[in-house]
Amino acid sequence: MAAKWSMGPGTLEVPMSLFAKNRERLIQKLQNGQVVLLQGGDDVSHYDTDVQYVFRQESYFIWLSGVREPGCFFALDVKTRKSYLFIPRLPEEYEVWMGKLLTCEEFKKLYAVEEVHYVDESGTNTDSDLTAKEANFEGINERVFKTPEEIEVMKYVCKVSSDAHKQVMLYAKPGRMEYQCESVFLDHCYRVGGCRHVSYTCICGTGHNAAILHYGHAAAPNSRLIQDGDMCLFDMGGNYAGYAADITCSFPANGKFTDDQKLIYEAVLAARDAVIREAKPGVMWFEMHLTANRAMLEHLKKGNLLKGDVEDMIENEIHGVLQPHGLGHLLGLDVHDVGGYLPDCPPRPTGPLSRLRTSRALAPNMILTVEPGCYFIDRLLDSALKNPNQAKFFNLEVLQRFRGFGGVRIEDDVLITDKGVYNLTFVPRTVKEIEEFMAEGANFKTRL
Image 1 (cartoon, rainbow, N blue to C red):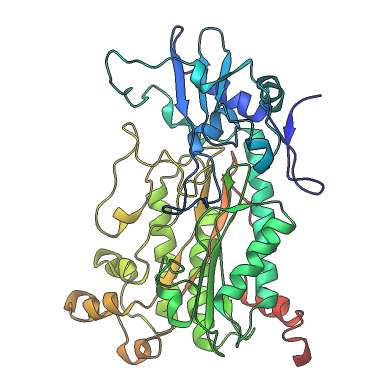
Image 2 (image 1 turned 90 degrees about the horizontal axis):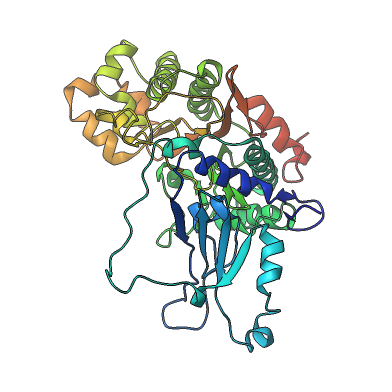
């Protein structure tokens, strides 16, 4: 029977052949006589205690091996195509506290590799005391192109994460805490989807917190009481077999958009729609960023928040005031996946586009996030209003209504295909869809 891994009934079975194919992809770019040696991650304790953080394997290591345990090394012989796993030799008392000690033969079957040895059986270079150079070879950037097996895993974790976001939308309401909404997301991802990990710290910003781009950290731990009239911006993604999802939903806490909330939300949705419509192989990612910005600014102009020519707004960097981050990023084993600015890729742009995590051309089998946003960040607005070249584009009376508004972000995970975009995200997106979905939930059913 072919080796597979899953988190049990109802969760995706991931074949070990996925990682064997990754090894073969790497071998194709190397030369006979070369050997790849990687060190995996180690357990990390909470400071000086005997309590450890929940372990998550290093991304390159899991990409090549599929190995989930800490303290391992992995070698790949290009000439023979043999893979070698080196595992830590654990003491016998491990079984008393931690569970059964697997033998080398059991590890061999578990991960479908040719040979397994203990780490202390491998040699080290005691003569030179030198470290190996960073790997660099033609085709190193191809990790951004996903195999069919990897795409299946990504589809799964995006579906689980989408469903978890929908559960949060049905749960959230004024009077609940931001972290309670986070807990609903974590529960669904793990209990239903088997995702022990999430891909990053959950961002559950409501009201003015929605304008804090990386909210949810230790100093601001999703700890605000949700108020009636708030917009919620929830950016969360599960992780399965090492592969990441990254999805953001924005919606009114009380289930009904105000006119101002609708203006900002539909401006951001117009930006997302423009990218979904126009992204395809050969298109440069920085061009998609500007496409999204133009669509958003045009909508805000129609809503009387902005005035003037949209191209003049771009030239004077108004898009960077309202959306200080890039359109999106590569997605895979890391939420901000590798390959954005390798030596043979287009260089990082300047100005507001400098925040882009890649500016390369789109190609089939890339997976990226599309995440336009519009935020009312006092520091950026105050600076813009002091600059005559920027202040002239804002209708100040209208702008005042949005001080403290927070922000809106819409983030989808998408696969680039030969024909364009295949969206891996399945959540309500239009104003009508969101209001109808939330109205059907227990929180707001009495309104019907």
